[in-house]
Length: 152
Image (cartoon, rainbow, N blue to C red; front, side, top):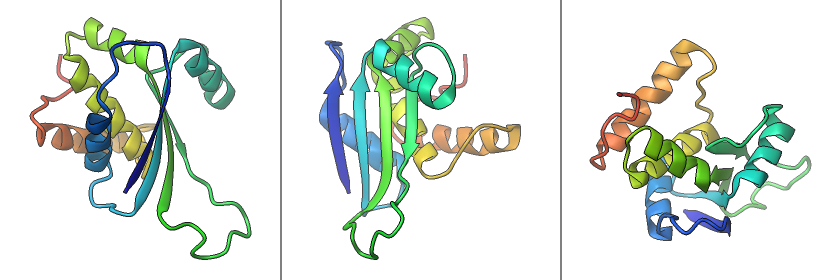
């Protein structure tokens, strides 16, 4: 597994790199030959990407960009399964954690796992898909001692 970390945030309260890697491993479950990029950004970059790719104004906590193989790429050209990129807005994650009365590390773990599940095709557009994704998030977070993030 490969996790590339890009820090493009001035935030001083970022999680340790090893924590991010551990949360990616958990979120990817059994995918050992996976490659993920995590880019930690501030609100301006998050807002620009959110508007460009989702047509939504303002920053958001996590954006997931699943990898799409270029047409004509020969088989075996990639040594690992490139899953995609996660763009996580540090100030939004920290603000949400405070507003929701959660420990910052617990909310960071949730956002990384949530993003990794998106990279694997999970979604929450309709209620049935949301329930499947949320139950898996709850189970994975519980396995590392973090309570249900959807309970108030």
